[in-house]
Length: 281
Image 1 (cartoon, one colour):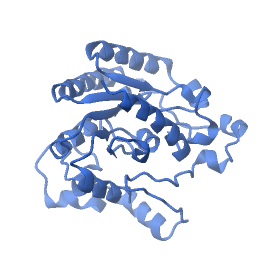
Image 2: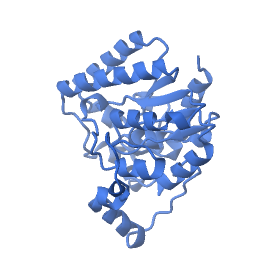
Image 3: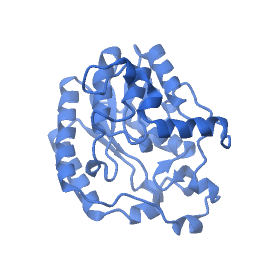
Image 4: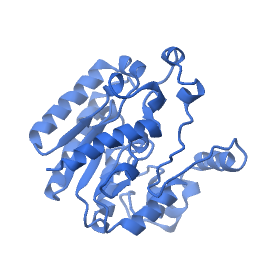
């Protein structure tokens, strides 16, 4: 399990870690710390939102004395999706593997019983592990799976014509109330990072061209306007925006699906992040 590798790396390198990566699965698959010169912990995880990101940072910052930079995801529609909240099922994972309390309350012994946090998910995972078709994983010490190429694109041999005709679910539902709430929360996060002397890099990861075509223009416009506002308010903030970079630098063979990179795509994205980290103010 990926979290075992993350826990081991955190335990071994916590006094040396300089960069903390937070975000959802798009960020998890886009950044391989192996290719960064700065000691980096990538705690991005599927469905993880800004509130959990900040609770992880708060719970770990005292253990990371050399932390200089935090990576925060601001991908398409991120501002119009609900936060995880205090009852997010992964809180048990964070507690067990990282000793980070994201429950917003005192923890109890039962909070460490990971299976009970989401029995259907872990039942499926156990079935896949012991009875399902085998997929060879190859996690490096940073918890990045170097063999994660299996996806809808690879299953269709990266054929652009076939992929262009695929039906897929991309978020296009607007929620302006959530946008305002999440934007205000991000500003508070950035104020805290600023007061702690932490450099922040906001990132967007590449979307495949047919996903770009199906974005809700109003969602994109609100997100972009918010990035402009916070850029003016926090002049030291930096943005690595590769959301629309598919036409220039990312090809079909760099993707798992319409909005996740595979390890080849991650190599390109991480190289761009490395360049920005080296330009640290």
